[in-house]
Image (cartoon, rainbow, N blue to C red):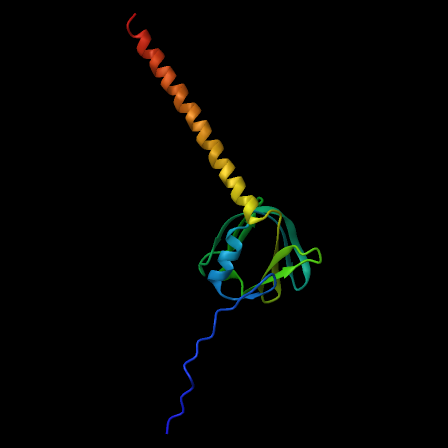
Length: 150
């Protein structure tokens, strides 16, 4: 006689505003939209470092380090056991990246929508500058062509 359990599928978790994320891909997705953050690094509850910086890269690679220096953060989710998503009393979201007795807290200073707008504005500004540079170059080439006849 065989005893088989029903073949049931457990749905993926649904985490809204607070919870613990252990899946590295989910951690990357959550952190990838961060731009400017305030960070607080503690070990065994004691403050080691704090400051502000820009999240430059979020990745998962057990051979690379998480680096925080020169106002830039390169976050390797493989450096942490889990991410705890929390909210302040003012309902502002922050992220605690946990590894044993250490915590790297990231407090966003902008929202993903603000970051996208900023990136779009930067792209638009660069495109406008490139148009001006190309137009100036074409004008210079036309001037050179006109002067060649003399």
